[in-house]
Length: 267
Length: 343
Image (cartoon, rainbow over all chains, first blue to last red; front, side, top):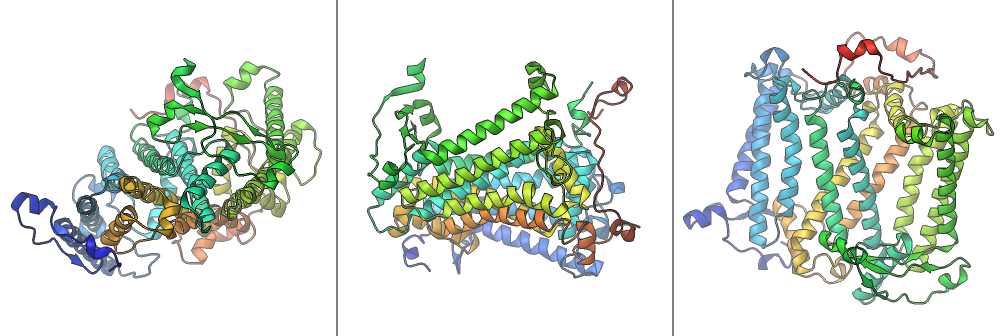
């Protein structure tokens, strides 16, 4: 426990507690808060990882790089697939999605416990949306679970490579371009923010003087200082924008547009 | 209208303490009267615009950048026969291409435009590093920002200088232009046997996605606890209050690990710098360590060999592959055949 932690570890303010007046899962294990949704997430993770290990054992290749849970074969469409021909993938994707969502709700409960805003679970939900778009929504739209990516190191690389070439030139996908722009912008703004804090925290003076030093530096350097609160808004919205564009980038490929080169020359 | 968007002019809120470095610079001018753009209040960011420091380095950088941009405009007008309208209309396809070989002083249309433009912009970027150093010293910052900027230069110089030098031709560098840039990225990957199997490219993507993830995590955490002052980060590093306590405990309870107001900035600085550093290594090793990253990955067991790929054939191909890039023009016959949209 951190030295100030015990003051914050208070029971109550959970969903089960509000519904039934009693919450049997309202406790901590080591550093982790558990809660109802921690239990759900743990069960889903256990089942998903268990199935994953069983499948890898049956495929018989335990090499970390090559071990692969392949997406269902095309012939099974949107139906269930035999275990080794995609059924394992279907089970793992279902339980992974359950555990992600339970984890997000668990973050909401921790936010309520700490009486803070819900920005982290909101942003995490957006990250989950990328997984759901890739593995559920787009395969459903395309009419085949085979559109999802294999669950492995080399398998997902090959999926990314093939998907890029399948739609001719992914660099000409405008949402892909906007997403790449967002990724690089977040990296640049992140470096600027990290440099600002690491560059100024060391001086042993009045904190207000250091804030002034930060603002005045940025005003000298680029003519504008967004402020110590504003920089976190900017970073939050940049990450938000990047995830939305990533979702659109893959959701439109193959469903609405089959060739991003011809996309620009429709007539 | 102007008064709707901007408030009244205001004096600088925080005074600048006097500095020898300001008075020594003969072009040292703190330009512009600060004013408030009230529109920015809607986004909950600081509203004060200005002042800005000019200085020798900054003015030099801007002058070089504008001169390079002038070359770009001249090249675009040259390509469209002097028609500004066409240059705007086809801006995505207007491009400056690098010359063959490593020589200098080519005729403008044989790479001279590109050479002059790149030289001027490289000077602008380096002069900006001088400005960064000067202002960091003036405001007594530790030089993290300068090192981040130099790391970014390590990537651009790897792409535009070191890799072409190692390959023996400026033609290995990207041309300037929207489609020229995108096409270079696509062709470079294919030319060197699929960049997804370049481990440094993989590491760079890890850092790049990680940077976005860390901005999502850090930005969200600070916004969620800013009611209790966690955004006063420099002050919180020395003397933590409940906002920082909560932001640390949130992650400790969620995933069993937490940074603190200081170490989160170590994480984000190294992740963002890692993007460009590992990218630079990935570019410089390309064509030097291997001429085919797919073959490299097969050899090192990070990917299976798919199908009857004849690896000897790949290994024996010439290092320089002449790429004939067709300019895509719609042909009448194709109009009925394909719309680019799924039926």
